[in-house]
Amino acid sequence: MNTFEAVRIVAAREVRVKLRDKAFLFSTVFFLLFAVGATVVPAMFGDDASQVAVSGTAPAALGAAGLDVRTVADDAAARALVRDGEVDGALLADGTVIAMTDAPGDLVNALSTRPTVELLDPSAVDDTLAILVPMVFAMIFFFVSLTFGLQIAQSVTEEKQTRVVEILVASVPVRVLLAGKVLAGAALAMGQIALIAVVALAGMRFSDSGGGLLTLLGPAIGWFLPFFLVGFVMLAALWAAVGALVNRQEDINGASMPMQILVLLPFFGVVMFSSDPVVMKVLSYVPFSAPAAMPVRLFQGDAAGWEPALALLILAVSAVAVLFAGARIYEGSLLRSNGRTSIAAAWRDREARRLVELDAESA
Image 1 (cartoon, helix red, strand yellow):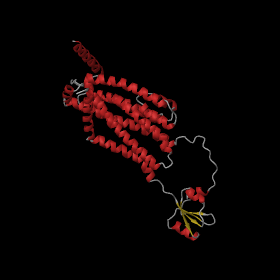
Image 2 (cartoon, rainbow, N blue to C red):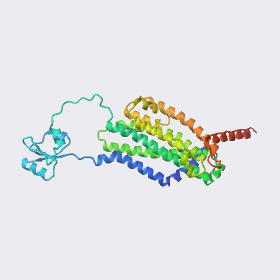
Image 3 (cartoon, helix red, strand yellow):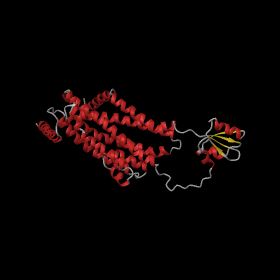
Image 4 (tube, rainbow, N blue to C red):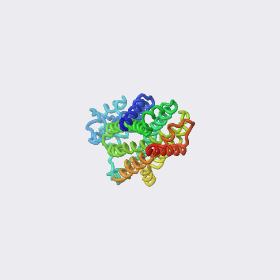
């Protein structure tokens, strides 16, 4: 059995286990409902067009304003509809607007003569979206990477605690076992993110008839997918190393605290400094914050066309370096069963094992 086949078998086993995991299924349903709630629900339950009655001929401005116009024979019929609550307001033959308690703003605005408005920055992002979009990108990257990362760590620790890992290592090399876990975690996380992206884009197409929001968010979501994939692979090896450092599930929280901080700091950085172009530019090139920061800059229109490619290249190079470091810690601590292993001890143990392997090969 070659290396590729061994990695595929390990990854397939991990995927089967996770697909039966209730936490994974719950998180997927939660994020899908969140995507639907953020895009489709507001459009479904938004305010309907105001219904107005008009005595005589209805002005063209009412139809252009999207009002539901009901033409009646005379003023008396219009007043009756208002009193019965069948319409929100009425326009009488003499130009008077009537309503029950409050002035019908939609009708009054439609009849008002408005000055010509010139927008100096028509592509500017709405203030509400400027706050929500960075939070959504950062939150998705934080929660998904944290959830799947902890699952990888728990899987490794469980195999150590039950001593199943000794059987696995006897069958496949340690790095193959690590590669299979990282590949399975990345595939499941990417599948979840892609599914959320599809639902979100479909929801925006349903709710945004003008296509403005979809035009703004489409490129950002498109770049978020590869950034998330590379960023997660980078973190997954470290999560596996964290799981290998301990022998009990109860010790994972303490051992994983540095990793949780490493994921949490970029989340707060993107959310807190999303309106600061200088800070966001720096964060978009820092490997641990780039998966959330760069899509936000694309949404805000602050990134040049070449910047996402350069940031993704930097992230990929960093991911390779972190993968090697995580693999070394993982290999140096996986078979140690004498309590919690320090990173320094795992690093030295891997170096010692490597020297032994080289001596064996030369002999």
